[in-house]
Length: 280
Image (tube, rainbow, N blue to C red; front, side):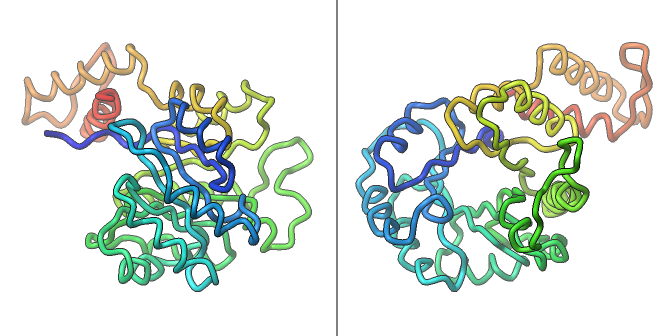
């Protein structure tokens, strides 16, 4: 049996709000990230952990993840107590700088899956190849601009025309390349403007074209557009099936014509990935 396709939508929810947690649980997100880090004030972190310890039992549904506080922070070890809950699928580790951070975490958590946020500090931009470890529990990598911007002392992440500035576009591209190099899911960052659905659709669609296979969300209303952007269309599936069928009919071929266009082995690899994502 083939593995399930990776989550398209990864929905953050502050873990200190019962109301927001319940709303997230009712969403169509493929993965829910219960946040114990940036969206929870220091004096509310203990209460947030208590809420997670008392989540209702369930059968099926989205993956449950917990974003813990960074390594070596005061709350980090306390957060790890939540991971003992059977329904928690994995850990989201913020502010990672190298693959060594994952090794350190795994000494405490074993082989539980890890989703690393890999571009939140200046040093992290120089360590993207260090995540290539076949023994690692890493399954996904995403990028973030807010913490990086603050760490760099930037007054804005955007150019005058409203587009993301070069430094943050570079961080995004490094995350994509680093994730693919490590053989894990590349996840695009958040789209912060909750009122701009057209902008979200455009950004998510562009991310899917570039090679990302999922995107972070910060509100349940963002889930449906993200799921749609990362779901292959009927036309995409049909084209992928035609490419796979053509190479199966001529397994020794390196280049074939499909639909009047020349396709080669990289096209076959991409077609198989499309069909894997379409199995959801």
